[in-house]
Image (cartoon, rainbow, N blue to C red):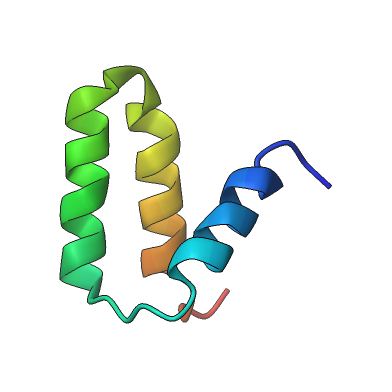
Amino acid sequence: MYFTDRGIEELAARRGEDEVSLEWLADQLRTFVDLNPEFEVPVERLASWLARLDDDE
């Protein structure tokens, strides 16, 4: 298990039943980056990866 899996597991355990829109998620990511600008690049990479999941490779 990676160190980051702990946060993912906490998210699933605490919010796993929630339904959210992608717009809500995008707003939360923007807010996170505003508060933590040092994470701009990894958040951008995650958002791009999620946006392109269905693209043909």
